[in-house]
Length: 319
Image (cartoon, rainbow, N blue to C red):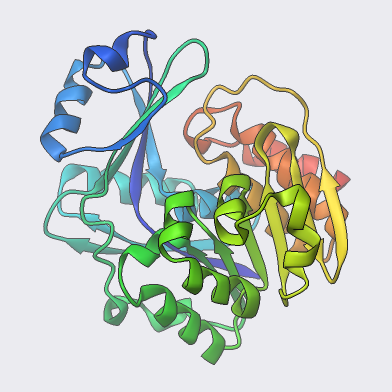
């Protein structure tokens, strides 16, 4: 089954810097800041070296799903600049079918400044990522032979999530939903609650996103909260693994303590591994382990440059 991913198109840029570098450019270490384009351009010029890949949450999941031997597409909006050209080329090199809408303006950038301790300082400029136009989306995206994977960041474009959910339901498509961020959940709690409880076959949240949604901790209320959910709810808990609940059954999966080279997209890779196992008919416990296993591989390489051959060989332990 194909994974049809829709979300914000952002160039993921990773740079390894000295611990004092963020302060030298006026950024609080460990923070996430939305900045104007000239500021981000200035920082890029100041960096000695950096790597990049076509990213954004939904695109990252499409990349990882493809590396696992699946078929995936990504739909998003890019600018008419050189970064837009690079985005398209990089996504297609990863084997992802790209349905990219090109708009006048800048392609979105997500810059991660990583120091030797592993602390990340994030600078983001979304550019035209929020200009996705429903009428420009090809009908082929909405097929009952595909799973629609949608990124919560699309809530920034009023009506977009509702449109996509309605199209998917009309096409009898299963829906996978990733919340995208704690602030997004707080700002769109009613909408996200509806999608997670009534529309999504699978819903993926980080622990802080779950707390923002349920307004209580995972340990205190996951089971009772999930009683009102028709699909499968997965809460990603970082270095402590993940927990999943379906039909009142709770599953937990721990992870090994690993020092990651690039943790950007780890949660997206988890979702790709989980869904690949689930769509192959694996039981939930194995889906959880494959999600963690895929995320472990993802953080060991820059820009989700996953070894497809190695991943496909390793999947035999799960499928």
